[in-house]
Length: 302
Image (cartoon, rainbow, N blue to C red; front, top):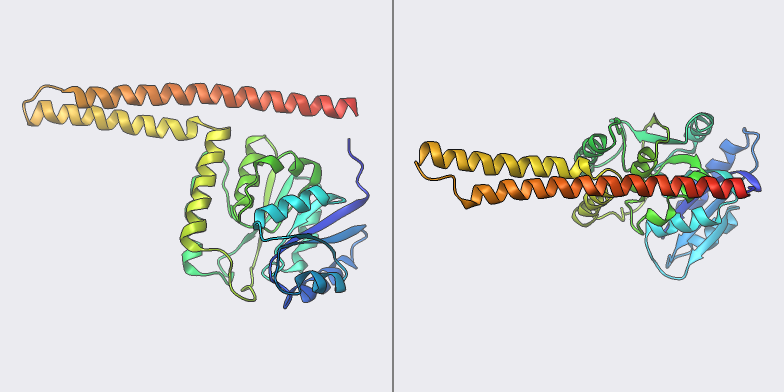
């Protein structure tokens, strides 16, 4: 098993945050001074064109810099690979996430594989993002079978070794929290939500409502079909079957026409979709068993 040099890595992806990042780092250090932990503050500068790197280093953080802007998720992946702490705490560099919540996250991550700080209704977030998050939370709750209180929150603490097992799944965009949450729950690990009041970010948001909203949705569907295909395929199959059966019944009863090939085709397609989902579920299960077995062998060999 890998030996970590530190107890904790506080990871912050940053892009053009020179105005606020020194204050955020200072507040983190004030909080961490009350905890008996060996830690580092790791800032991944995702190709900023301002003085983010210099400001973060001057404030005492270790900085890894991308030569160009790749994406928030790419910065997180770089941070995960470079983390020296046994526990990884991810938070934004724009001042939305209060460092005062860190002790509670760290206390609970001793018992859970991941602890997520979920935004309350009192948080200073925009209305359209609140609506979108409710939709994502409900869809993810259906997929995972567990109530998801804040799918897109980037303020979370997780075992570094655990999250490294999911790095290859993470996108280069803002939807990395979605992927980590769904992958973690599908792998049978524990998750706890801690409520907190999010503050309004300093500067302009880098998330685009339509573009990133659709991307979040596609990520949920992709991870869902990757880990739990029947959760997606069964509703589609059932909908196609009801549509075909209902259309045929309508033709026979109300129009006095034969059942017809359209209804038969829809019902046949529904069966095919169900069988594809069934095979996909078996493949996903075999893949999961294989990956868990390979991981256990690596640990035993070490």
